Length: 237
Image (cartoon, rainbow, N blue to C red; front, side, top):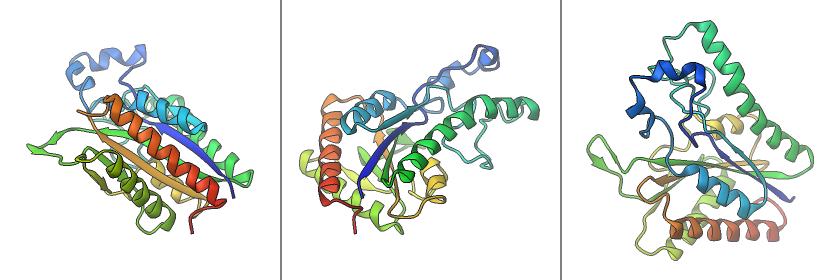
């Protein structure tokens, strides 16, 4: 079974549609912080997508308007700024921005599987260097579902390759968040079994996410990992 690669970036920018900018007039500092978007991930996602040659879906809408990485029933899908909006207006936001993005990714996954391919989905994110006064001690996190053997083996191999390529840089599994927390990859796992679908969230610390050397290491090791999978001729057993 050949593999089709999909790279997504749900928090690539902090743009706002014109009609909603007044709503954020008092929140511009927040909009340009990690709360507004994942710094550096859009370029990283584009580099990795180009290396893998698969599908690429990205969004530059600020997650403070609506979080594209949250399930429709998640309490955090709307930010504290938009959660008090009229429900009818919230439904407009979902219809115009949330559903089209999620459905485009889902169509890419479904189309690949219908062609008889398995899917490797890489969702790119970044995380703050410090949270609540505590410094995060890893530069890269690989998030996956430990119960899905293929995802676990992919992440373990990628971790080993990255640490060999970047001595002294910490790469941790299911850090800084658990891989089974609510998100786009978690949602898609509910529709497609292992090994047809493998969803991995790549988390890179924001102080290093724009480092060209790190981007190159991520690209080279991921490309090598995918080449190994293709050479194997089927999903990891």
